[in-house]
Image (cartoon, rainbow, N blue to C red):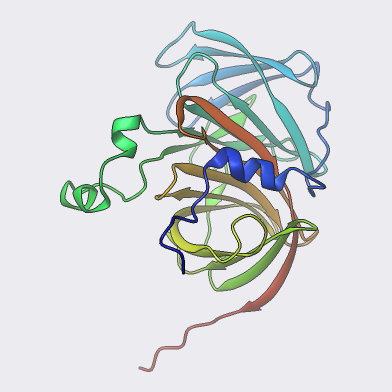
Length: 276
């Protein structure tokens, strides 16, 4: 093994994933719609989709009321009526927003990921442990919401353990393939089988939500290179859609927020048995 690091910056990863990728095509199904999203924290955020790539979000109620910003966004549709919407917050450094919008049930999940400052990124892992912090410096917030009606308990998408124990291979392109092992409700392991990260592997913090039968929202936060992976996994269709976000190289003022999509194959499932 070489003494030189094999870990890639997110910009290099994006370049490796780009050619012949298995991403879903962007859709403009939401163009012309206005969705009032009642968040579980009391916010009411209105999303007005002007076109297939431009939206305005406005805080109608809650902290920051009156704030209104127009952003560029992308949207994919993994199942009829269920969308993955993604954008970078243009007026908030290092921050991206991903929305799972389920128009079949009029509810959804918002995931806000914020990349760390340069100083926070450079903090040693041991110092983070001593300070009682997570190893990953990436901050991730989840909000459940309902569309058009006040949020009530039990609505939105629920945390799930249905992926735990599964070992799944993902083919992102003819030259990029990874394996995920979903270990427990908080951690998963990954390894690159082929591609620009071939041979690399790690175990990272993650989050799981159930959107529909055999359809999941999965988010992971890496600790070595500040990175968030945000994907929807459809084990019925055996397809994923989503994105990976991090700093563009070593430039802490610029994000690289790139789409990913893969074909999925469930390799096996482990059921742990404990003797009484």
